[in-house]
Image (cartoon, rainbow, N blue to C red; front, side, top):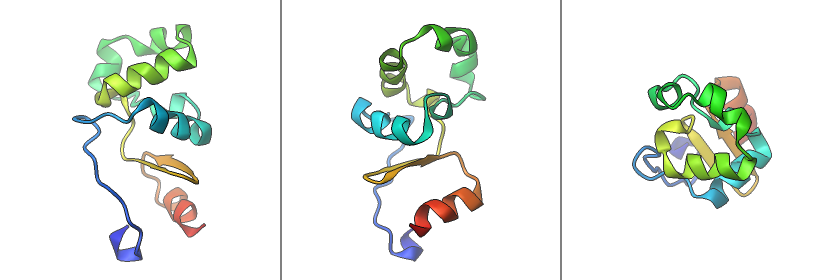
Length: 97
């Protein structure tokens, strides 16, 4: 992103999970399921496949804000929306606007 003149702050999500406010912005763009790293060890060990449908959106966002390993990475959150995972065409489109 720096090579395109896009300012950003790189944060290690595992060490410093996004805040609930940041996750709410991402949720508005991506929806809840896309925020979770469903292939991660924590997701599987916590049985999130079965637990997630029983949680309210607020509870799920709270859980993500407490456990960075549950967050699908990379995650970019900005004033105009959010993007996560990495599919080159989606990222190109996101940063073209």
